[in-house]
Length: 231
Image 1 (cartoon, helix red, strand yellow):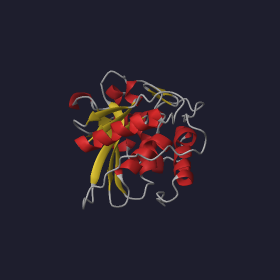
Image 2 (image 1 turned 180 degrees about the vertical axis):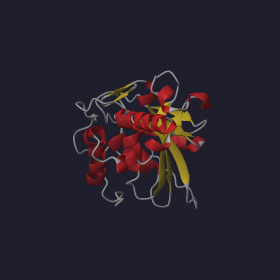
Image 3 (image 1 turned 90 degrees about the horizontal axis):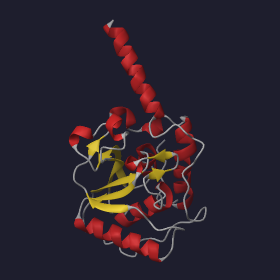
Image 4 (image 1 turned 60 degrees about the vertical axis):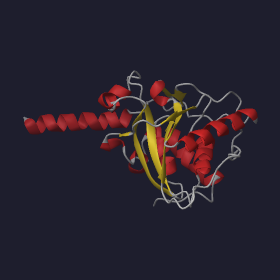
């Protein structure tokens, strides 16, 4: 009986993983700039000296695709799916999916600033990863957990992000104002194991194929110098 119960629970977890981040694949996340257009690079992108590792936590809709994109960026040391914005007792997928936890689905991006700058990480975010003009929504997904937010790990990161958003708005890089917010990171909570490396291990998932694979393709096309293959 215990074996049967364990199998049932395991199957339910797999099913939950397969339908996470929305099951409607008819609407592909759209970018408001012209197709194939790279948004301007940040005017402010200070060097960080001899540092060989830095972190930023990014919310850009379903974490599967955000993680998948940054895993293909040269200089990114790791990309880990998780939750930020809420408390430890609500940092689980079931609660976050309710939209009432305060958390956003996020990815902790650890990168080598000597290879890829923080500014480039943000430029990729606004060009490829997310539509920063839609409030609490990305592609087919709806809810506060799918908001766009930059969780800065230093005051300098927050300053650069805020200046960049103002720059893009002033340049009218998008057809509507940017609603992406910038916050100081409190705590990053890693997501459940079955969410990690999801795009890499589930390339044929219909949601991945419709919503996330095109983002990796866009990264390769628009940022060829930063793109790396993971195979």
